[in-house]
Length: 196
Image 1 (cartoon, rainbow, N blue to C red):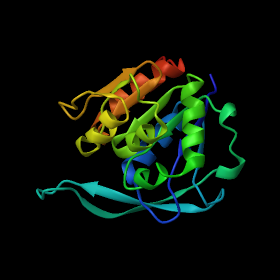
Image 2 (image 1 turned 180 degrees about the vertical axis):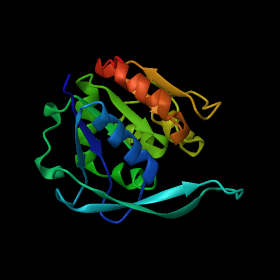
Image 3 (image 1 turned 135 degrees about the vertical axis):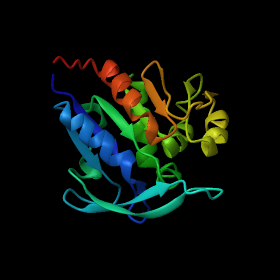
């Protein structure tokens, strides 16, 4: 089965979390999905910088330079109705993307159409800004709990941090430790089966 997938990435100056973009992108490619990576104010072939977040015993995570991530299509040419799903990464970018009306419109269109959406870590800031969390159960990075609750969502404690939750067409995870569950639950929503 070929599924056309979309990623909402990052505005031109902010960092997305390295694992939160590369792991889903490459996992969906391994499942033979067509995956488009898009970014506001950038074009196909441009790159976005990533950051690696690490917990090293401080009160919050540290941030190190990650890898360059190559974009595959232009945001301005994106037709939301042509996609089967949406993956929203975390990192620092969602707090800016949540203010972008074109991003809000894209996310709302896909959610209203009942298409599978997954959101990772801080990505739920975008979901909250769109108003699509109303009545949905989800998790996120604990620092985003207030966004989820104020956005009308029911907070699911990410305990342990490697849990991923599905509510209807929405899959949410709090951190990259949940990727095995994320891939499995997202595959189920997309109707993808792997046989060995």
